[in-house]
Image 1 (cartoon, rainbow, N blue to C red):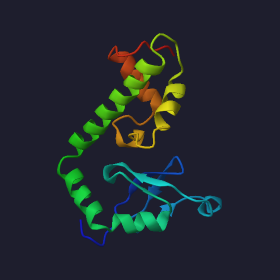
Image 2: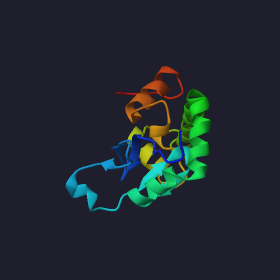
Image 3: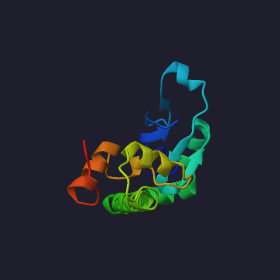
Image 4: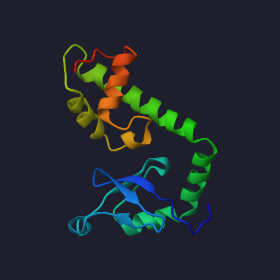
Length: 145
């Protein structure tokens, strides 16, 4: 990847997934362009206030190094984030809801209150439902639909 290129893909902006095209522009509705955006890139552990900050970060040397690391073994990186997400989520459940029946969204909302949490879009699970079904299948939680 050249130092002048900006990676495209899906990123979290204002808590929603948005597509960043190859030019580095965030595709969104016109009404949403005026609001402040909070962009998070898990690999660099960097949060940008707006699209310009995100563009500048993507062109930085540290981001380029992280992209090289990701490119060498993306499966290992995603699996690492997945393990960290799962472990932290289960630890929170054990501490806060050990003997109670609780909705997954309640635990997830408590989980994301931690400013340094692993974002779900950095894991192998696309949705909270998919993650909870995984926990049920592996016997790590009792899951009711």
